[in-house]
Image (cartoon, chains in turn blue, orange, cyan, brown):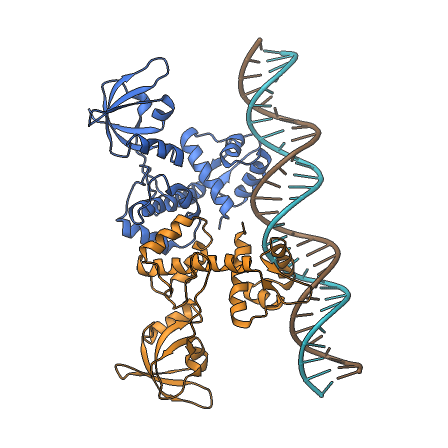
Amino acid sequence: MASQTEENYLKSLFNLANEKSEVNISELATQMQVSMPTVNSMVKTLQKNEWLIYEKYKPVTLTPKGKKEAALIIRKHRLTEMFLVNKMGFGWEEVHEIAEQVEHIHAPKFFERMDEMLGYPTIDPHGSPIPDKQGRIQEINYLSLSDCKAGQTVILAALTNSSTEFLEFLNGRNLSLGTELKITSKEGYDQSIVVSYLDHSSETLSEKVCEKLLVKVLE
Amino acid sequence: MASQTEENYLKSLFNLANEKSEVNISELATQMQVSMPTVNSMVKTLQKNEWLIYEKYKPVTLTPKGKKEAALIIRKHRLTEMFLVNKMGFGWEEVHEIAEQVEHIHAPKFFERMDEMLGYPTIDPHGSPIPDKQGRIQEINYLSLSDCKAGQTVILAALTNSSTEFLEFLNGRNLSLGTELKITSKEGYDQSIVVSYLDHSSETLSEKVCEKLLVKVLE
DNA sequence: CAATTTTGTTAGATAGATCTAACAATGTAG
DNA sequence: CTACATTGTTAGATCTATCTAACAAAATTG
């Protein structure tokens, strides 16, 4: 059984691999907030347990076993977030830190019961897919708002970042999953976008923000 | 902040101190399932952080700070058990192991929300008192069934042991908190007790079992 | 392509939590 | 009160997860 630390490395590896396909030591070190030598020795340990494959100076890749393990931890994280929001009344900006701890609990029945009470959800409160019990993750291909064009109407469907600060930023602008937005204009200089809400109010969103907003295009 | 391991030592110390007032190294070692040298070095560390007072060859005593910390961990444990039983539909025999992990989560809001949803309970599913937010624990003076006499009518109010096996034993005999029992007879030889239920069925309970059953005497 | 920057590795140290072996203090029972 | 048993301590080892310092390989860039 993986230690809590090992579980966190697996999770980071899984997430990084989904963004970049090649994961190197320095990226992992940044993600995990530890030094490169620490990562170096940790990947060697993880390799011994066949969670990943690693050769000197080469990128790190998860084995199928490692991917499944990571996905199951992410499953526990996302089920927990959903439970906290839907069954315990937390705001979507409050749940990440709690789930970060709860995900390491070893008690299958606990998470099965959450799943059941939630009606077997497939996405978490931030729109991320919840891996199934086999660790299979449904790939949803949303578009980033930063890739949309003026005139398009979109629905906010997911986020690529769930930090409290970002979520509070969104709360302050009445942006939540399902919010319909029309792209009024896009500034060529800084890639910022002006969106208008159904109630005709409007907001300017910087490129940095737009990149983190995943949307479904309506027309 | 205490590590998970330290939290477990504090909890064990607190529980042992409630039974015996003097806690020595070997008892703690047995309770924690580690060797005496391990306890020896750990009590030294805990003393540095002022959780307890310790002198060579003397018993260990928690400081007020240590007692409060321990009580607050026990509070999280018992709130969790209550939540698992009352809000998630678990049986009282399933919750100890899960709570043992959840109690180490650092997220005041999480436990406050449980408390609120449960309506600020004062006892857990096994009849043990839940310490308040200040770590104050309400002392309830139940009698052990093994100290009762033939002819008395009692109500099962709490348990001194919450292991799965014991709870399954009780389930098998329809014994739950609130069950009314009349003591039909008490065997002088092995201290076993015959009890009859309201429905006139009856069971023989060994001394070992009776010691773990805390009751309110009705008349 | 040589120089520089970035990335990665090795070696060795530290801190936490544990162990065993050896020994020392305390307690108990004849 | 001595002998034996129990309890406790010290020393030294191990394993995990981390660090820094020093060096080496790979990548980038002029």
